[in-house]
Picture (spheres, rainbow, N blue to C red):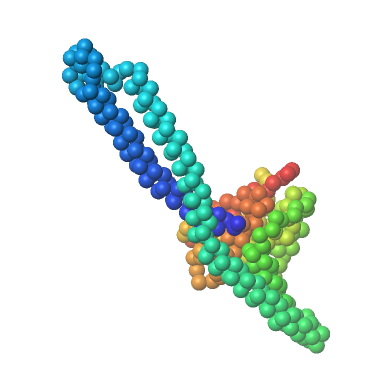
Length: 317
């Protein structure tokens, strides 16, 4: 079950379960009052039919009730009523628990179907994109042979690579399988991505300060995280801005001098975006992959001054 399906399931279950138990508590309280009242009426009826005149003449109805309520027999009977009500309540709560689970599962069924159709639609699009991309790459190879490698061809190849990276991000977005991990050196991954975006965003200045660092993670997933963060730092930067990729104190920090983020608390939500660019799933993918890899990610941002993403690397894990 996906994260948002679990959230819907849990919220539906809790809401339905709490509402039912409120009504159950009211009903059981009314039943307790009714049973105890009937017992009190029986006590008064027995008093009216009292045969032992020495007792009957000694008390009035009110005095006798006050006296009888303090007897061991009365207290024992009331306790028995309470225990019986409590046992019934436990049984009903278990039944309501099962009903609430069934109801919650039933409520997410349409959501699961809709999301499945959406995933299949995206998978079909990703598959169909391969054909024009392959044609573009072949044509670029032909142009490179005819005219040699120039900046225009190089930029076109980088654009195709960017589309391929986006395609991989979508595939991870749709992937629900457990990620396999291994011990890798992340320096070459980050270094390659920095050089890649340097070639595309020539108006930006890059500061790269990092050493060889080995962590246990999934190489492809970690690459997607770094790619998304550096890509965003470039896309939403200011003209002639800066992108800093620095490692310090077991933290990989990717910062920019861009426009900043208005709502940092929402930026990892799916489909949330603060501009017309993109579709709002890039950082959702980043958060999903970080969660799957047990990597903590933090965001600090200030409007007009830029954003800073801090990745706490699991060194030694």
